[in-house]
Each structure stands twice: as C-alpha cells, then as structure tokens.
Image 1 (tube, rainbow, N blue to C red):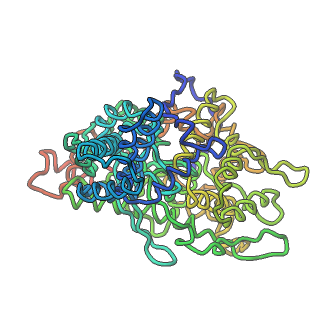
Image 2: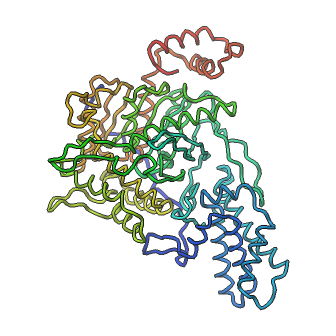
Image 3: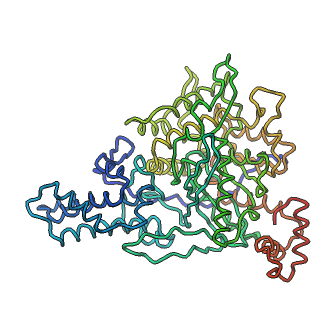
Length: 612
C-alpha cells in the first residue's frame, strides 16, 4: 500500500443542512420517554391486523360525526387519523394491507365495536359508510406517500403532516416522519447462513444513477396499494456498493451520492450507487440477535487471567449478509430480464462499521468474484482488541452486558441516554464521552444538526431487537482487531492485515483520534503495515470520522480518482462501453462494431484483474 503524507482538503461550499421532520402532537407521544407512542395507539399497532385497526379508526371518525362540541370532534378526528396510519406504517401490518381490505369484514368489525358502546341511536348506513371511507382514505393516502414512486412520494407526503408509527410494536418498512431519500426504494429477500440455519430478511435498499430510470409505477389509487417496484440499473453504469456505519441506514449515503455521480460523469464514467440497510438497521426486517448465535457465542477474555477464545459471530454474519445481498440483487436482475450487476461492481465503499466490513471483505476467502476494490474510511476495529489490560475493555464489557439485558419499560429512555449522553469512566479515568462526540471533527460546523437529526431518526426505528443488536455489534467491534492475529494471542497465525489482497483505498481524518479509540492513528499504522496490499493510504487534515458527510465533494473526487487508476490504460470510452455490452448481453450477434477491440480489451482485463 502506498503511504503518502497527510493532505488538507479544499474548502467546500456547504449550505447549512435542513432536515424536514414531522413532529408528533404531544398528546400522542410520551415526551419523557424519547417520544414513544402513547399506550392507546401502541395497543392498536400491536394488533398487526389492518382490518381491525381500520375498524378502530372508523369508530373514532363515527364518534367525530356525532360529537357535540368542536373540541370533541377534533380530538376524535385526530385519534381516528392516527389509528388509520397504523394500518399501513408497520411492516407486518402493511404486508397484509397491500393484499386488499374486504369491505364486509371491515364493516362487521366496525359494527361490533359500535354495538359495544351501547349508542343511544343505532348507526345509519350512511354514517357507517362515511366513517369507513375516512379511515380508508387516510390509510391509502399514507400507503402511497410512503411506498409510491419517488415522484409520488414527493407530491403526497407533505400534505399528510405527522403519521403515527410504532416500531416497538410493528417495525416501519419505510421512513415515516423523517426525510426519505429522493431516490427509489426497493426491497429484496436476502438469505444468509447462520448457526441455527438460514436467516431470510426483507432488506431495503436505494439505487441512485446518473441516468434516472425509475421503475414503471401505476397511477395513484384510493383503494389499491402501490406496487413493489423492481430495481433498474442501466447496463452502462458501474456499481458502487455503499455500506453504512453502526446503527445507521441506507440514507447515510445521501450526502456523498450526488458528488460521486457528478465526479464520475466528469471523468467519463457513469456510476450507480446501491446503499442498503444492514441487519436490524434502517427500515429492513428486524429479528432477535440470538438467531445468529447464542449470546455467549460472543466470547472474549476481559480479565488478565482469562484466555478464552475471541469470537465475533454477529460481525461474521453481517459480512456474510453483504455477499448474500449482492447475490440476491443479481438474482432479481436475472429473474426480471434486466442487466446483471456483479461484473459491473467497481468497489465496496463504507466508513466506520462499513469500513470495517470493507477490510474484512478484502481478505475474505474465497474472494467474491465481483469484489475488485475497497474504499474504507474511519474503519472500526483498527485498534488493539479492547480486552485484558486495555482500559477500553470497560467499554466492551459494558456493551456485552447491555446486549443481554431484557426489554423493560425504561429500556428506551436508558438506551438513548447511554447512546447520546453518557460518559464512561474507569475509576478516575475517562474511557469515552457520549458516542456522538466521536462522529464528527471539530472543524465540521454542522455536527450538532446532524447529531440531533440522528436522535430523532433513531426514535422512529427503536425496538428491542435494534437495541440489543446495537450493543452486540458495538461489543464485537471493540474486541475485534484488524491489527492482531487471526487467532487471538496466537502469534503462529498471521496478522489479519497481511491477508488483505483486494486493492484498497484506506482513509482517515486527523480529528478522528479520540482517547482509547484513536482511529486516525490506528488507520495510519495499519496502512503502513499493509505493505502487501495494493492501493494507497489517504490521510486528511481538518477532518473527523464522518468523512463522507464532512468532505463529500473532495472525498468523491478521491474515490473516483482511485477507481480510475484501476482502469486498464488506453481503454477508450467506446471500448469500455463495448466491453460492458459484451459482458452484459453474452450475445455475439448483438456485439458492437468494434467487438474485436473490445474482446482484446476483455482478454487484457482478465489477465491483469482490472474491471471493465
């Protein structure tokens, strides 16, 4: 790996970030418990039965029709609206809702509920019909505002204001009250091996292309749910796979995406960026971490006299899932007769946890056929394992205890305090400040806005699975080390970094050098040690941990330059297109006119290992 002295990125023109957030009415949330939805609404979300939920909503709209005061009418309407939202915002409930609502069943449940109230006057058919229509109208409007095409979402979402959602009872399938990406959102079933057998997870992802070719969408319908779109990635685009950081989601790529696309185009390459939610993060399907491996399978020596094996089964699972995700997307392309992607993957890129995974993939055996380059910034686990004599073992021990704690009423509040406010001490020694103090450099002027938005966004997806997964991944990242031997403490096994064979751009910011973590120093030292790994080390002054957010324009240019260096010399744009077409179509009759030159280029590329 080529090691260069630190550089100072150019100053970037940045507007102060604005995060449009739809705040909940205070009567519907427990402000003191991180805005948890009130029990009256959580009970409805827990039904996970859209017909029953809509019946409860319609009952409130019926009550509004018979209200005797404007205040009573407004309160009933607001409650009916919020309940209707819960028929479509939860992942499990929506999966039933989109198959259609049987009107006779809805009416039957509504009449049962009204009969139980012993009303002074029997409901008329007109009242029943009106109440049902109001509940259904709200539910279908919300379904389209959250699940429609990007254009439909942009048109419908602002007019609906706050939408009720309760991740603790039914995990949302799309962003609800926080900004959704302007790109199309898709979902694929990813099947990943685990100790107890294969785990299949509905996984959300976004695709951003230079040539915006959204999937065909059906027109808005007041009584029909939107279709599940099929991803389209134009055949002349190279693919960048973005891996987000710890407890983040696919949206983390949004700041970097436009600059990657623009810089690629400026240098003659069309890129498509795929960013997806890692397990138990973002808006993908959630599950109990013990399905991957029992809690005690995460094993490490915390005390000086212990010499237990060091194992990280959850990190292993996440790495496997990345590979399985690419397989799943490739299969989706084949099933729908669309251009395949594997041969077009230019790089896996990611920071923090994503950077950790990139380094792990870079030495994975066998190496995935599609993995040509890795861009890893601010990677976790570049430190020595936080065990035994390292004071940082207190952090790993805290996380180890936390991921095994059962969910109780105070767990939500305690989690947010621990994740966003708590400072950890070992006697008089300060081990670590609040987590957000590690996320951005002191030179970044908008750190406070990003941190506050992160907290609001995390409230929307918080559930027990997310909390336990958060702490287990944190624990495993602290006890894992890229700098140590494959088998902890066994010097007869190779140091992990010596096994990295995939071309790598390793990046760190000098302001990411906090006590007991020191990611900048660790990354710098790791890069200097990786003498057998092709690629280079990039060290940035006046930059912190979130390089892709703090320096998106500069960083995009560095990434694209690095990928451009990997292209075969003398490969023209027309020949590159011909190569891509040949690899894509596998159809000699459809080969372009310069196929001879293209096939020569293919032979050269196969020999030197560079991508088309």
